[in-house]
Image (cartoon, rainbow, N blue to C red):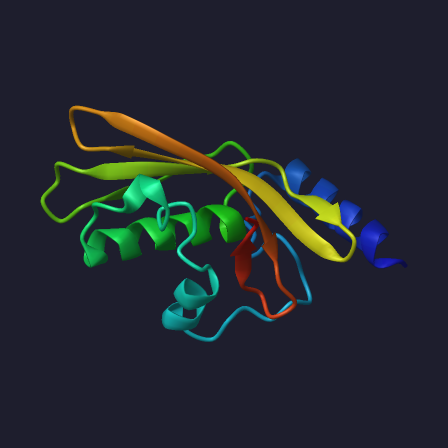
Amino acid sequence: MPTAAKAITLLAACLSLGACTTTSLTSGVAAPTTKDTIIAQMNGGLIGGDLGKKLPERERRKALEAEYRALEYTPARMPVTWKADNGRMGGEVVAAQPYRVGSQDCRQYSHKLSDGVRESEARGTACRNPDGSWTPLT
């Protein structure tokens, strides 16, 4: 049975049972081995640009980890939230449905940042590399 047919069959079975979860949006691709590798390969993500330029390093890392979780594990339009240690600042990352460009899976996504008074948002697209990491497109 071709891979696409297997995936469709598995998805149909999961939907009918209602209890399946996924660990990755794509199968057969090895995930990066460490959090540091994942973070480094995202090249700062959306939070690395103007959106997060005033964030302390610890919060920027939490935000980038949320971007990775949204891209890698989260169904379309489901928010992944994060909070700063001080509890005043946080954000929400939402990824769209994955789509294929050549041999790569890509997703558009947005990252909202709130400091309790103002809310800022950045939008972008990232594509999954053969090693399981995600690279934002510039």
